[in-house]
Image (tube, rainbow, N blue to C red):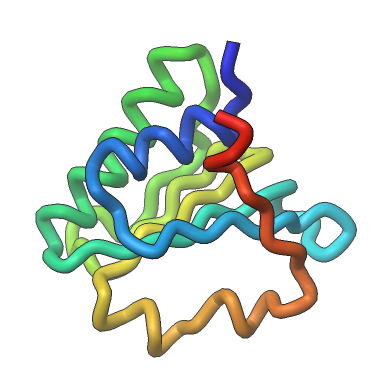
Length: 114
């Protein structure tokens, strides 16, 4: 059975999210163990990716604690407790640059584990 991280990664990948990055937040943030950061080129695609993550997680019995920013479709945060997924519109991702903000976090290569 896939882990929550693997399920969320597969969900964003299945909806053609771009530049998917996974950060190991253990020991760095109390918010979550891992962050998934990705982007899409339109608000509709950002929403479709976020909806897929929430649907897959719920279907597999995981809690979707929070889903913020859905209506605007510019930056949607899906809080799955241990994993937080950030789905950006391409134009917003560079502005917020979470990878740099959390630069101490180790990059994880989830794609090789799936």
